Length: 108
Image (cartoon, rainbow, N blue to C red; front, side, top):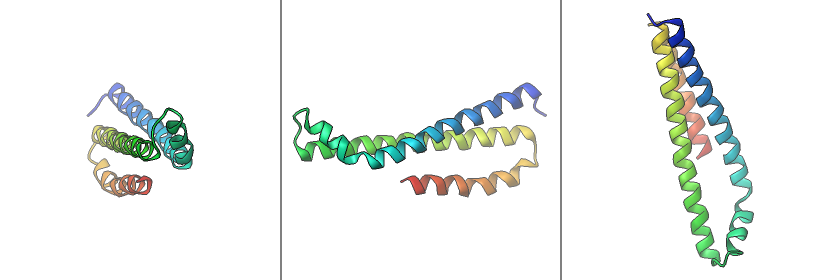
């Protein structure tokens, strides 16, 4: 059985990961709306349109990898917390996993 301090620490990790993922969701929304402006600003630095597009696409790919990392970190934090709560958490973990995967695929 986990101590109350361990449960609080695990719950704090879950909350932190959820906040980071919420910020990442907002970033994805803004990134989707700012493609033209992003490319235009890169063009003002002297890049050709093709190079600016490549830079933007590279940036999007890196953001996607970071988003996946945050999603995995949240899942790990949730699993750790549920594991500390005891055997009753096992069913909830399997129910939650598809919801997290759906959120990631929606963003990609």
